Image 1 (cartoon, helix red, strand yellow):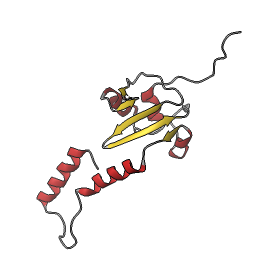
Image 2 (cartoon, rainbow, N blue to C red):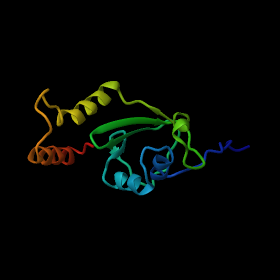
Image 3 (cartoon, rainbow, N blue to C red):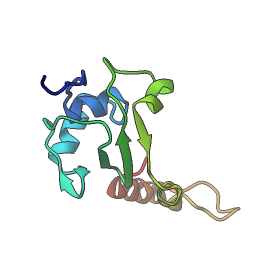
Image 4 (cartoon, rainbow, N blue to C red):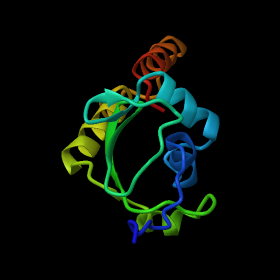
Length: 134
């Protein structure tokens, strides 16, 4: 008798990241892999890498370093309420706070200063683009 083979569907990392809503499009997931923003154990992953349950991935999304552990792969793209069935978010709350503080830093204005001038607005927009925040 041979080894019992589990019926685990093999799926590419770029497709899986899109299916579990880490990225809006599969193209964005593929581009992130090619740019070295998706890592496993500190090593860059190619978009064609097949995912396996239990693997931990670090994904850089703008300024956020998101760490997730794969649980399962869906048959097709899933709705947002079903996402926790397919991966565990291991990102620390401190990381989310760090990113939140980066996003609010540029628009912090003292009370009574009024609206930003056109020049101020351009500087704020430039900093947001530079640091990748929305």
